Length: 422
Image (cartoon, rainbow, N blue to C red; front, side):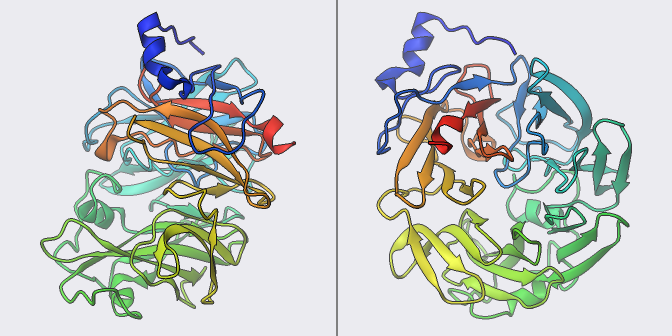
């Protein structure tokens, strides 16, 4: 891709303190307790003048061969998407000069979670993403090599590991409750209902396109104890994720009382059919999470035992323990590399507006920084650019979104092979 050329002034700006990573330059962040003789290589795999990103950290960005990397392209930044704003869907060929191939487009997207673009689990050829057409949100399933495309009349959020089933909230409800996480263009038909019985979590058969409501907002608004016992709160669901064998999925139940901007959060799990619902974290402050295996969930949350921290929860039990105590002390977008020896994580911008991306060794407690990436002040709020680190299927590469290169948000590849093989 295009080389990033920096003036001396720009170089000094981006490397102040020796802690910022640019293409070909990586440095260790404050707080990391392991220093590499050869820091991991970082290179841009997209470039301007348009902007590129993938968005959320829990989706499959790479194809199974680790050759193709999915991304989205847009020609503006620093404002909310409008109903007529179109993004392009494409992929980068890492073995073909990092060329960008356009594959499709979408009018159903947001800055933080994109259009749920992802490689279809279990497929070597198919990708899936959400779009808007004919007055409804839909999803496209495309064979990137043959060009064959199917359109299902429902959007998706998380896809089961076998690629056959998806679950999703009502994105109209999400947008109404927390603008910037749903999609512009369609109003919530239940906007005046605090907990509608006809809205909630839907299960979609990706072969037939059929859909059914499996968990309603009305049901969960009355399920278990809700912190603060908010009588007049308005409820919604967001952040769904299947476990590693597809038997259960996580969902966040969120609510906001009238007149308040902040919301409460419970983390729940359910069977793939929507049954056997369990409140995993009842304390009201669950944030980012990931499944380690079919039974254990790593999440940043508040717990009466240790306050704010990363916790490992055992599903359908009350077992919980701190992970990375005194080391992983800040909220971030966490995932386990294959084998679960390493946790890949990041932080939000610090006081110098730098975002640290790092690996944490679960056995030794060693932390290895993959670099600090500067996020200029204009990348805040809804259109901020979190790094959202994603790993390749072989666990040897990481791709992040970042605006540190001076040409807007772009995608960068980090080679972690020397770290994970040591």
